[in-house]
Amino acid sequence: MSELLQQLVEMDLGFQILLGALLLLFFIQLYYYIYYFAAPIRQLKKDITFKSQRPNVSIIVCAQNEQENLKTFIPKLLAQQYNGKFEVVVVNDGSTDDSNDVLERMAQEHSNLKISFLPKAAKYMSRKKMCLSIGIKAATYDVLVFTDADCQPTSKYWLDMIASHHNSQNNVVLGASRLEKIEGLLGNLIDYDNLFSTMQYMGYAICGKPFRGTIRNLSYNKSTYYKAKSFSQHLNLESGEDDIILKDANVQQAAVELREGAITISNRALTPSSYRHTKEQRLDCKKRYKSSIKLSLFVEKASRMLFYLTSLAAIVVLALNEQWVGLSIAFTLFLLRYTTQFFVLYKNSKWLGSPTHPFGQVVFDIFLPIYELYITTIGRIGRKKWEMWRE
Image (tube, rainbow, N blue to C red):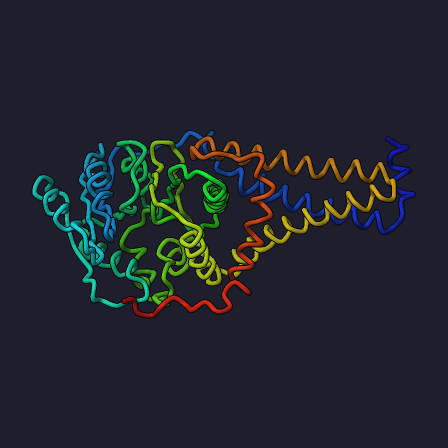
């Protein structure tokens, strides 16, 4: 050990600085993975007790030309085993297929199914927000649970699990959602992106810093909606109904639901174009997060990319200069970070039911920040902003 320290002391100052920078970046990354991203894993080990009585709940679903999904998934929402009253409010977003006929037939059989609509001719930047607002206004009950028309719960107790968190302390509940398996490289990338973002926003919420969720599995009460001024703060954004509303309502605490039966699965078919559009929406919303959240997310991403660059530089430079002790330290730090990341991703993927992609882990980890930087800078050259009014 003393010989190792002696070799480090005798190493050139430039090599020492390189290893010191790598060590600093390693500990920053370790902090994020152990404190934030492993938080859902720690939460799963806790025993949480719930009151037996549940609040009355309105499930809000927006649908546009989703007749097949409505046939398949709305009955699964109506069949939820719930210890309380609940209704399903479906807002038909100007559909031109047979969605309205499908809903009318179901409404004849289910008294707790409500139908509302947003006319196709209505022109808004975010029709989704307008549909949600219509659904919220039509909702009978104070507690609202949101999902999409292309989503299905993984169990008939999904609603019960989500609503079980609502009490005097918790007005917001974050659920998780995954996509049905999409084959190919794009599918693997989307799986990884969804896994990472889920453990990120869940982890931050558990650590007392809620900043986003997913509209495919989200719950809050009407007072949160009105406190956020009914989406009026970000009507110029196409999205934002599942993250910026937390900022606008100044949500300081949010419950998270991690049980397997409370996850929703989306059968949304994503193409490279639609995936890019989704990323653009999310990144536009990210600009409006609280400054502390933006800084924290930036530090994680920047330290991640710098860690990879510094690792590569250290390995190449130290190998070329035959600095074997320094090289072994650089390799060890890289492997320790990879192992920690894999363990945290693997544990989170187990409860989410998502693949881990160990062989693509480093590739996706590097590619996603570069891709996000591209689509927010030179990738927007020649591309129009989203239309203020849709045809």
